[in-house]
Length: 286
Ligand code: AMP
Ligand code: MN
Ligand code: MN
Ligand code: MN
Image (cartoon, rainbow, N blue to C red; front, top):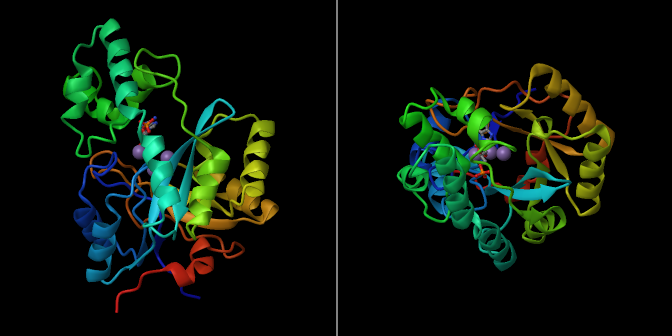
């Protein structure tokens, strides 16, 4: 059976990627992606451009976003796919989720200044294309530029994660709200990269059961964030909870991302791909 090359998780410079939506679409097509979704953090501003570019290049397209959620003391990401981008509920919900980012960034810069790194807010802003969407990734790029760290991963480890000088706790959206914004706009909610969260087995079980109780239907099994063992583990989780399975590189930037667009292994045949359930929502090149 021919499995479609679907990549349903990626970022443009409308959030914390480095390529504009059109260039990202070109890269996806050149890497063999047949069905693509741009999933910028908490933001839909790139959707029309991504869809048009995808269709021009002969790819099919699903609308997407990745919503920042606070759950059990951790930040969890929920990917929304195939929803109506004009829906007022999801647009308002994402605007509210974005709204605290600028103050958080100023507070992060204050923490970094105390650790001897001045003017990080202004520095990070130079990497930002969408002023509503300043993220830790933009700080990481600035700190690499200053020579304090050699790569963005070590910046996160030393400066931008819980307990480190540039980390500021933040209240993101509630899990139930994020799932409802997506589903009420006609889309499917998907738990992004579950292997990344530092949950106890009990908290992870709570995440999956509450997500499903709110109407969530999918989980990312194949993601650039998972090891080979986690691919198997979360394939089992998808079966156990009866969830649709997704596949997405989480590509951000040619220089930074370890996983290329369209390059992950296929979903195991025993799983139900989320894009089959979303078939009526797919935009297709004519
Ligand atoms: P924010 O939404 O501002 O908290 O930024 C979160 C983003 O930071 C994620 O979407 C990733 O792109 C990036 N990120 C988080 N942890 C790491 C890490 N350890 N190494 C590199 N990038 C990371
Ligand atoms: Mn990101
Ligand atoms: Mn994420
Ligand atoms: Mn992502």
